[in-house]
Amino acid sequence: MSILMISHELEEITQWSHAMHVLYCGQMVEAGPTKKVFNGPYHPYTQALVKSLPDYAHGIGHKAPFYALKGTIPPLQHLPIGCRLGPRCPQAQKECVATPTLVKSHGHSFACHFPLNREKKKCNPC
Ligand code: SF4
Image (cartoon, rainbow, N blue to C red; front, side):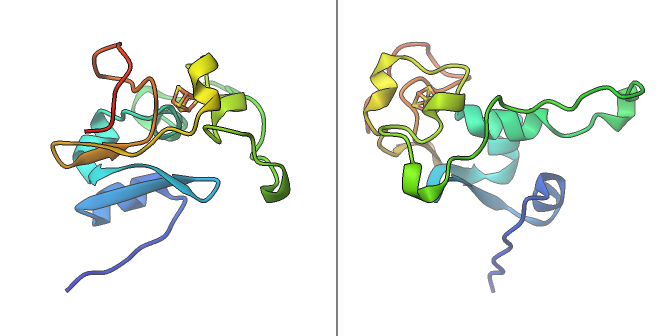
């Protein structure tokens, strides 16, 4: 039996699921086994979600800001060309005006021209 959970509560998802899919502006940007995606995200948006979680174990300073990507989610009638995260992505480069295809590697999928936690060279679809 499978159960589909849809949530913005990343901590809950990691506790209750074996696999997760991360979407941004209606497109899947990363998917794979939950622990693998959470502990070593390839996509900058997934990394931003993980970094935005409050670190209660180490304490949170008074009025300390939580991590967030700059900018806002674009309205659906004004989506950017190419990678939809492009205008907000800290890793964006000129190649990102082309829509990244979904790359699958050892059960872990991602759609990014410059994935994190991997070799720094550009990835080609497998
Ligand atoms: S394709 Fe480019 S803009 Fe999109 S997430 Fe990857 S590095 Fe960022």
